[in-house]
Each structure stands twice: as structure tokens, then as C-alpha cells.
Length: 517
Image 1 (spheres, rainbow, N blue to C red):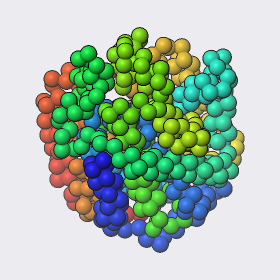
Image 2: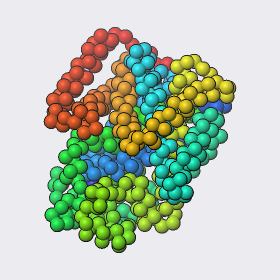
Image 3: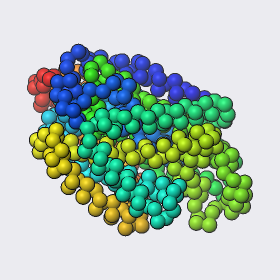
Image 4: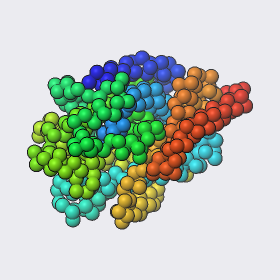
């Protein structure tokens, strides 16, 4: 628990100290925001600050800081380092700076900002890339909550019904003004997620479990303490780490709890609703730190659940007996494979938090992905509209963009359902695409800072690091080329190329200054 407590304090200090440093770099002021200057009653709508924060938090959170943190803890206490350092120095900076740039450019979406600072060709590539990513988010976050809901209400035959219901909600939420549904419902769901996290935090301090610590994270035997039965690794950690090397797989697995490119597509939504630039740090940087806190709590809960047999507290005695007798279950799955992330959330919340916890688990596991899916479609509509110069005040213009978008997403959803491994394939592409989008966002911000004679080092280092992570993943991951032995050479080559490219660009463009809008 000591590593957890240190990480908890570090995240809070990160907001107070490093957040203030980053804020001074861009210096928010009292100029009119797009919500006031360009108000249209649909997408540009000034909302109360607390609502903007809650919507931003839920937009970027979804199930990411929960499921990603649970799966990320399979890599052990190293996950703490990535959540804390990634969140403070990369993710929160990424979200805050992309939100501020959107504020300074009339609420512009990510492809427009990338085009301004990285060129028209990059803008066109990222336009297609971003819309495809958002469509994948929508398709994934229709199917996964539908599967959970059919297990709760309706059985196997209810899957299609739930998909229709969820997709119907997506259509309505995408087309209606942001304050009609999103502005009213999202804060309630966000509060539910925060209350659930606070309840688990209290539960951890009450139990004060002895967990793996950062200073002995190289001791694999300690992580698997109590899990070896008949000499076999029931946890399954050894085989998992062999097939999924910590670098770079950890940095793809934990995305939303540390840094996520998807967030940069969501920040413009709230940049169009913010009343003052001076509120940008608590809304954008603060929401990311809050997400990091949620990820940290769930990483610790799952650490107790997996490594020190906390799972025995929340399953039936029959399940415990069956598992320990068989060592590996009938389907060959080990412990970390047997309990999926949604199952773990339901088990822990209902056990630790009772009836209230079970209700919050439903909101967290079902409502969170749904609320990420609808804003993904909304972002896609606005990005396409901005590229085509289509005003979005009239419903007809909104439908002209939304109908083809929904049809394409339905085709992707049908493909996912017809392929036995469709969801896993789509999720893998989403994970890598998500982090790749953060690479382009970080480079865009770095160029902006360099052109305006600001300390670009704050995003240059994260940009180079994430470029290396995404490039290495393509080579090392078993889901890609599966050549982990090449990792050191890829790291060296990509680092040298990235730094050399920036130095060359900086020397060529050092005399060209882009004045801030």
C-alpha cells in the first residue's frame, strides 16, 4: 500500500505544482471564449463550470481508467509509475494544451489544429484517421455494453435489442443540442463513477492489504505469492509477460489512465462550452488527473484481487474450490484470463460496496462506454462538418453528415458481430490507433510552442517517447509483427530519427514565428 499512497499524493501534487507550471506556459486570460462569441445553441453552448468538468471527465474516462488499469496491473507495480508519470507529464499536458489550442482557435477540432501546425497533408491523413478511430469507438462501445446488459436482462436473445436501443440513443445524443441530453445526464454518471472510486478508496484503507511495491517489482515470485498450486502458475503471469513484453505493451494497455489520443478529440467539445479560459486548467488538466486517480485505485484493487488472492473474498466457495482443485479451468484459462475486467468490477463493487456498489458498477460498466460512444459520434460529426465547412445549426445539415456516419458504423458493427474474434481485433486496432493519435497531437503542440518561443520541452519529451512506444509496438507485439528481440534497435532508431527530424525542422523554421491568435 505504500506505493499506492505515494502515487496518490504524487498525482495531487502533480496537479498543484506541474499543472501550474504548464498553465504559465500558455497563460489563459480573459478573452471571450467560443462558447460566448460563437454561441449557436447546438454545439457552442456556455455551461456551468462544474458541468463542463463532469462532462469532460466522463468523455475521456469511459471504461478506460477502469478496464485498462485492471489489465495493466498484470504487469505489476510498474503500472503505478506509468499512471503517475504518464498522467502528470504527458496525459494531462496533452489534454490541457489541446483544449487551450481549441479555445484559441474558435473551438477547432483536432484535424484542423494538426493541419495548421503540421501541414495540410498531415491534416488530411489525420482527418481520415481520426474519423475511423471515432467510428471504432462507437462500434466497440455499442457491442460491449449490449453484451453486459443481455446477461443482466433478457438473455442471449436480447443482444440485438440492446444494440438497437444503445445505437438509437447514440443517434439522438449526436443530433440534439449538447445541453439537452449530454449536459443533463453526464454529470450524474460522472458523479456515480467518482462515488464508486471513493468507496473503493475507503475500502482499500480499511483493508490495508499487503501489496507488491515498486522497489521489489522485479521479484516475480512475490507477485505470484499464494497462487502456485502443485508447482503451477495459476495466476498465469509468467506466460502473459512472455507474450506481452512490458515495453511497449504496458503503455498501450493503460491508455486513458495515463495518456490517450482520444481525449484530444473530446476537448474541443468542452472548449465550445467553457465560459472562461482561466477555467481550462481545472477542467482539462484536472479531469485527466482525476482519471489518473480512478485508474490508480482500480490498479490497486486488481493488484489485491489477483496477486494476494483477494478474489477468494468475492466469489462463491464452490468457485474457489473448483479453481484451486483444477489449477487451470476446463477452458485452459488461468486466473487473470478467467476474470474479465467487467466481471472483476461487478464482483468487487457488489462485495465491497453492497447494493449501492452493485448499482454503481452497472453505471460504471454500462453507462461509461455508452457515454464515450455518443460523444465519439458527436466529435466525428463536428470534425467532418468542419472539414466540409457545413454549418451545424440546422438539423438538415446535421443529418447530411450523421446518416452516412451511422450507416458506416453499422456496417463496422455487423462485421464485428459476424466475426468470432471481431471485438478483440477491433479493440487491438483501437488501442494502437488511440495512442498513435496522441503522438500527432503531442507533435502538433510541440510545433505550436516552438513557433511561439515557448518551452516546447514539456511536450517534446512525451512526443518522442510515445512515438517510440507506438513504433515499437508494431514490431514487438504478438498482435503485430511479433519480433520482441528487435525492441532495443527499434527504440534507438526511432528516437534518433524523431529527435533529428525535430532539430532539422527547428533550424529551418526558427525564424518563422506563428503569432498566437
